[in-house]
Image (cartoon, rainbow, N blue to C red):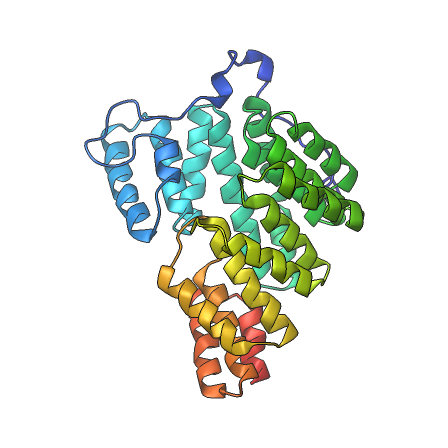
Length: 343
């Protein structure tokens, strides 16, 4: 009954020295080979890099068992590999040893969030009840991360989206107010988060207009166009969304936003059941590039879109193989299960 109540803050911010909460988390002694700080761990790309960091940080922690930074860095390396059960106790140890470090609470909150997502994805009412037990600790960790490190835009954005995406638990009005607080800190991310908060809070047209105007206000970034296209897609305005996504892909950068747009253009076509051959072209480009940024759509989702396109072409055996590959990578992925059953 208390799930929707305001979370507490685990640390009294008045006891934290000015600026301390947002400081980098770095190893106490230099590591001969491997990441030296949380920022360096987060900058790694690809499973091999995270596996190597895990080995190096485990060795460091064995040699420095009292380290406060090493558990946080190791927890992040494990989280990025999906090893959430191993990461969680290390993150808890990290916030215990570094109680004033906002980034330590941020990593702890991310692990709790992904753990909830994984359990919910497995399906069933009992899974949802189990996940809801972690909502309180998750919100505590996230709010503490923001209080200690107000400049953490990622944490602030996640808190807003929690309010918008969890009916009955989150508070859309509070989410919008929190989004508006982001604008002076980081105008672009703040404006775009306000746009999403408006849209998912039921103010569809104002949200779309806010995102559209941000494209002209921040021409140096592709993110405003990506967010605008995403909201158009949510509104089922697929043709408009596809045109904006094409403009994102026309930029010279082959960055995370480019591959998010590429994936969403697959979804536009498989949803409308048009141009399945083009979907297959997009799929091959994506799988060949194999982007490793954290927020790039994972390969199991791309294999599912390949299966849907092949099914629309009547190539059922190939479609079955694609759906099976998707499920091999993520056994709980419901869209791939549904696609397989539809054959």
